[in-house]
Length: 185
Image (cartoon, rainbow, N blue to C red; front, side, top):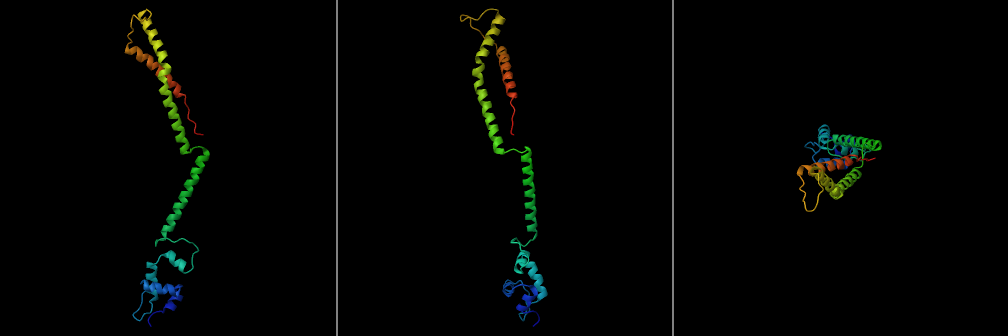
């Protein structure tokens, strides 16, 4: 016999005899022509073909329940990703406590409410200022003509006069809107 028997190789590698038989069937062992196992060549082949995590579990080493792909760096990558995630989560918690980070749903609701108020303000604006505009236009026409407006004499309103009056009211309205302050706190 040139090499080791299954029992001898089992003692040599620290694996069970059943694991040795399974490795032989999967061609993870180098076997001589007489059926004995070439220990050195089998150790190398088994190390190349077997997941390091599975080797640790089969020998009873390592108490972790982690089972990853053949590349042991995948555990390190997952651990690094977890650490980065935890650090980012803590950073977000700090920003939230400082008030530099706001709840998105709350901010969106506030912006929606403000936009609705703005729209409602502009929708009702013409009816609020129409009478004022008409009075100002009439006063401007009377001032320019020097005569009071009567039904038998129609008034023709110039575009420039109407534009001046409208711009004044729009500026006044926008100045009132400029005082609006948003508070997310």
